[in-house]
Length: 136
Image 1 (spheres, rainbow, N blue to C red):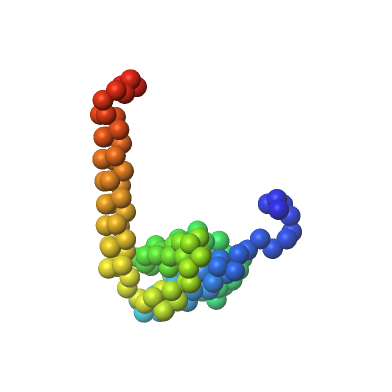
Image 2: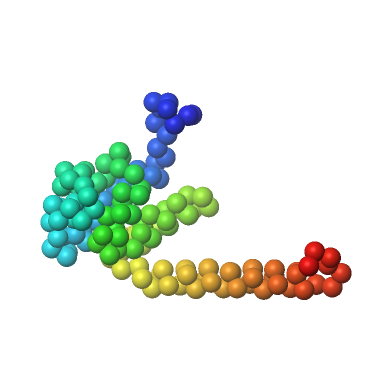
């Protein structure tokens, strides 16, 4: 389908992410006693727009959710984990994503990524230093 077509190209996982994200954004905003109007002003949108986003409106873009989350100093792991799970045909961990603080999980994931990055750099360095290579 082309971007101009009128067919629905929204994957069910994207609807789930938007609904979950809207709930989490609303919960954080209320916890921090921030009005919809104040949040809207901080990101250059209307309070109606924030209301719709918090309600999980399908018309919002994921970048809108990320913008709101960052304005509230929230992580966006609730956006990335469902996408990763979907790509690997795994069930989305709903209960995990509803937790307020996933900082520890994020730190552990970043440590795994750092280890993989270090291993990749080491492999590349070993390949470049291998005897018999003429591409130096």
